[in-house]
Image 1 (cartoon, helix red, strand yellow):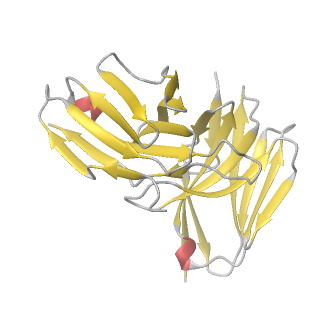
Image 2 (cartoon, rainbow over the protein chains, first blue to last red):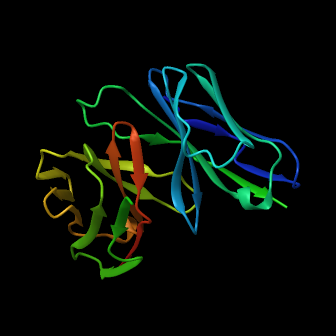
Length: 116
Length: 110
């Protein structure tokens, strides 16, 4: 398996523009998570899905942020309009439902977003 | 409020020694505690998971302990190598809410 795949790796955009981040989880994983990492706040959970259904979006900072998972192999995180304070690395992670084999979460390589 | 603290921001040790990293938490009852390694520019990589009813778990040169009374986990790397240099994150998970500590940056000097 190629692991969790995120695109783009880097995104530079102007304030006010719409940004869409993409994620392909590992095939067969039931859960998908979006995290944001900054120096100040570390890794923060934004939202997670179970079987494509959003379960908890309490970490989404504002209404400018939205996430979708139209099918088991694809998810998007959208920011509209973007602001400089959204600059961070955004990670997608997935995991299997079966914890019996001690699996943790598998993270993608992240998207580094810079809003100027 | 829930808090996860990793003992130090940075830890420097000599090659061959044992590195010990600490993770303390408050106002949390995790079902699982996990440790991850993160290299610059990369996503966290899963290392070990320990359950609330387990005291210790080992994997090759890695050992994790979990004391739910003290609300503390210790993460040991024995016979450390320069290639072990990275940031190590502890994460507490309960019913799919997984929160991370700020991490400890470990540097192993040859």
